[in-house]
Image (cartoon, rainbow, N blue to C red):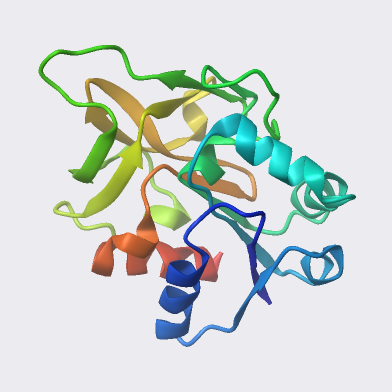
Amino acid sequence: MITILNYGLGNLGSIQNMLHFLEVDSKIASDIRNIKKASKIILPGVGAFDTAIKKLNSVKGLFDILNEKALIEKVPILGICLGMQILTKESEEGVLKGLNWIPAKVHKFPHNKKIKVPHMGWNSVNQIKKNSLGKNLDENSKFYFVHSYYVKAENRDNVIFTTNHIVNFDSAIQFENIYGVQFHPEKSHKFGINIFKNFLKI
């Protein structure tokens, strides 16, 4: 079962609608019992880093079961937007530690008078290496972004896509069974559908 983690942040309905369009069964869940059954987990997120970590901590046993699924059972996990950022060690946005599943940190976009922050709207990605998540990626593929902070992986081998907005940042990362995308595939039409299709095949 594909489980969309409900911890109070994220476009849960939009993600489930996309999976329904692909004729894939999914469940939106926040309870430990259903998460234990997950064959894949999607970790959405919209908002602030510390808020997300606090919400995860507010559900007794949730951190433990997520670590078990990610690090022991090695089920495929996809973090989306803020869900990608909390896969990392920490963020300049807050003081709390992230899940620390991927060696990376989250940084604030530098001030630029000519380029707006948050980075909002459609942008292209540069595929750094061949990866299951980027299979069949068209050179004209564009994805929908909304964020004021960006991820920088410590190991460049963990980077799948980069995108430019003021700086070149990592817009998709991967470490073993754990994947993260900074953009919103559920809002990215046919390009986002391709990302979900690829994740479902992993």
